[in-house]
Length: 267
Image (cartoon, rainbow, N blue to C red):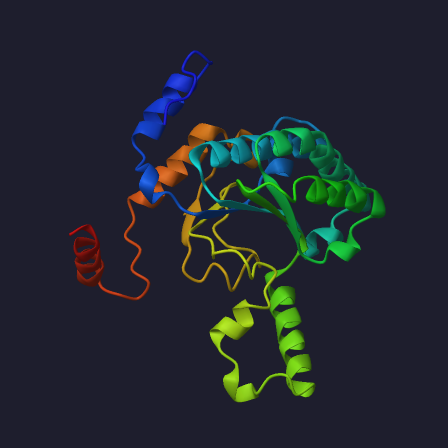
């Protein structure tokens, strides 16, 4: 893939892109966007400034994912635990998320990006929800990158919701308990019509998944970087993709089995 190398920094990006095997990119990348507040604190700024700067990183990650042909990008935008933050910060975040998506909607449509929302969306303030839902509707026809925002999201709550839905089907006589499989559970997830993430990236230096996509990331490759989210440039994203391609994904099999499968496929 060749981009406009006249733009500042594009030569450095192209060098990284040239290291990628574009036929082996992850189909689905999930991200935990961590470090906005610490980025601002380190600069003596209000935490809200970090959140505003973080929006730029969302745009960069979305642009690069779309340019590379990645099918799904899922971002942990706001957890259920985040409702416990100071009310002023929560209000700023809600306003910023809604405003940013509203402003980005024309470009999302232009670039064929479909916005989706997962989580306990009904907890969102009406102003933010209206803007987000308007973008969902405006991009519903887009069939390029699917950009999913996990808002008011909790992996444990999602699994609890799934258990409740399945229990209701059993109680109604629509489902036999003996017929419940992993596929049954997966079919009730928010992400039921998406592949599981191949790669989970977390910025900010923490090395945990923080209640994010607990079922879906069972076999995801995990990539942790100390880079704070506002500083997560396209080069840092490409570094994560390069690292991903160095790994051997075995899914419980041996390395020899994986190689045998690859040799059979290639022959």
